[in-house]
Image (cartoon, rainbow, N blue to C red; front, side, top):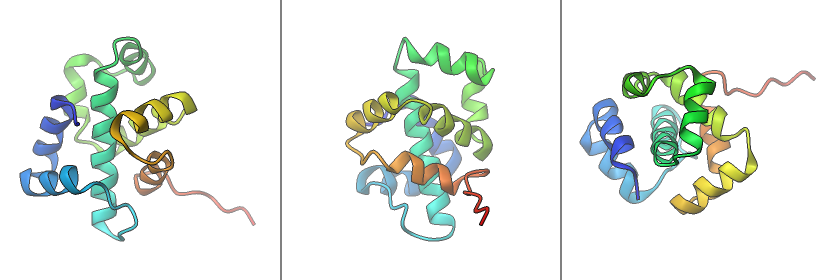
Length: 126
């Protein structure tokens, strides 16, 4: 189930047809191009909704990002902010597991989504 906050942000960002498809059929991060990015953004919005529903973790997130409660919905329209949401979640394996268990997702999905957003490309030094 998706938090209403995340659903509403996602509806404003992507439009109802895309959101309905993504939220009912699940994420398809293996697809290439814009769909992959949109699926990653949708997952990040789901993470944001999960964080917003967590009374202990949401204030930590706000403090870490410098975002205020009033500005989160506006910031959620930015791919860079959504990347920061995933970066925050990925800081702790316990958070990843709790989110994925709550959403019924594979544990590796947040990392895949992060790779699809700005700054998520893995540098190969060899």
